[in-house]
Image (cartoon, rainbow over all chains, first blue to last red; front, side, top):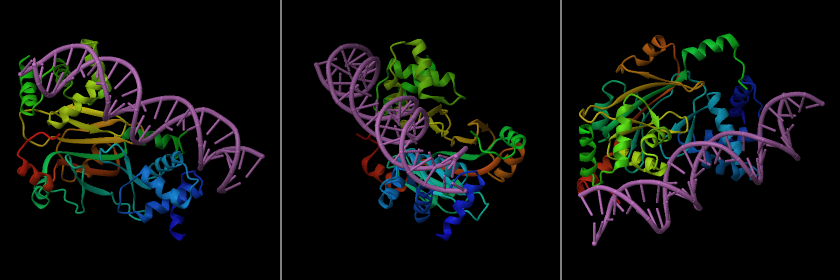
Length: 157
Length: 157
DNA sequence: TTCGTTGCAAATATTTTGCAAGTTC
DNA sequence: GAACTTGCAAAATATTTGCAACGAA
């Protein structure tokens, strides 16, 4: 249970309460660190342990976890939101390079941090024909940063 | 109308017919080159010119356009698919750098191709606090490339 | 004429929300 | 005990599909 201390702390810091449901979802995410589980999949896994679990709670919890920066919400264009827990200790930017095959939908994860001549290397190393690529940065824009400073760090309602 | 020749050619090459609806959607996309219109928005714009237009056709057409590489399907996590026409003449990889604000949902487009020390520059230049970033490459994976060679270049059914 | 395409309506699928009951601090 | 959280069911939203009528080659 000591692992979950991190969760309790994060929730508390953001003005949220610790509940059995949130803890169970957290545990499932930790057990599946390296996967990209969908909301439905997470819900099913939690329901195995606690049959009373509701799907709405799962949606609400994962949304909350994203808000407090505990998970990353992937979008692989398969019509589902998929979540991956972020390492709590590192402040480094979590970097993921994914190769999404348009034909079979397979997701190939590239581990290395190849920002330079990335494309060339990927083309060769993975035999992957790059048709298109997108770089997305998620964060807080200037305007919101300013507002944050005005309002302190309170939770929105 | 000469612009649309490109559409007719692309459709024909892929075994599809040219229709009024496809042409109209193409024209709307060309008129809004630099925007990221949602399916609904495209549908509304086309319906202004042709009130008989159906939403299902819009969905089907945009799906088709993506398949033949005429458009890029953006995902900005706002629950909608957004489309942008791709320049037909250039074979270069269409590169987009987007700053997505998690709080207000604003999409800031970064025009420059800054792959090196990108983060540092963005942090300063846009006053954007980067929490996370993802690099996605869309294309064809090795397995599918091999299959393509076996099957020739036929349309899937 | 043949077969792809359209428009409508109904069906799916995912996610969100209202609300009463239950839980946490 | 006050305020937050849950579970259920209903609602909302986006997208897909069946099918008869239509249109393009």
